Image (cartoon, rainbow, N blue to C red; front, side):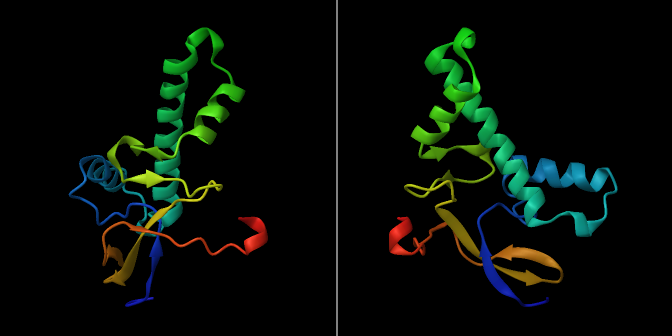
Length: 131
């Protein structure tokens, strides 16, 4: 896989200049977890959890604790375009989808996924009938 170039919609373990990402990577290492477990799924799940926490907070701000329910959280997610994702990365949903709007070009170097670009807007590649 060395040298492979691809697109990554989530932060990578190489993002140690991002405080929260560094904390997760340091914790991963401290727990002596095998390196092969640090995957795009791991970083994606952390981002999804950060978005969920933010959606809950936005929902409580909008409707209050007494009206907090799944439908209201879904409404918050559906009506929100961008999330801070606890500082992991900029995160925006593409219009009309639940897909990330931003990604980076990355390359595998010495077994690590290393960003080659900043965050870029992704084109909508869905067939016209699904847009």
